[in-house]
Amino acid sequence: MTPEEIDTLMMQAALREAQAADEADEVPIGAVVACRGRIIARAHNLTETLRDVTAHAEMQAITSAAAFLGGKYLTDCTLYVTLEPCVMCAGAIAWAQVARVVYGAPDPKRGCFSVLKSPFHPRTEVTSGVLAEECAALMTDFFKTKRPAKL
Image (cartoon, rainbow, N blue to C red; front, top):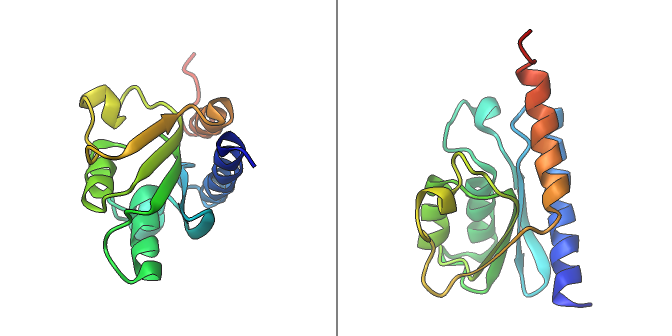
């Protein structure tokens, strides 16, 4: 399998998590953490369920991956997330020393690259745009039901 095909498969798994969030009436963002080609953590937004503004998909996935590995650093891991991480999540990604971040849709309002040059660890490789249209459509559809157009 090519690296691009692996990214697509992993992002599809993240999209399934985002769809689970949508079904739970959460903002539909999903994340998976892969280590050496194997998914070790899956998560989606739980901010409404937990009533916790920090319960973003990335935060949940990082916590789960660290527990799985038995340590706080994810230096051999790739985080796949359906939406560009916010500054808070980017900080956690940096502290966890995630080796690579792959995200689907950009977030021009709150995405870390819209706010900062690069919040990640200097050695972190970033790939964006994987299944971007699908990731963006899920978010757009979710908010259309939450914020109907005003007449």
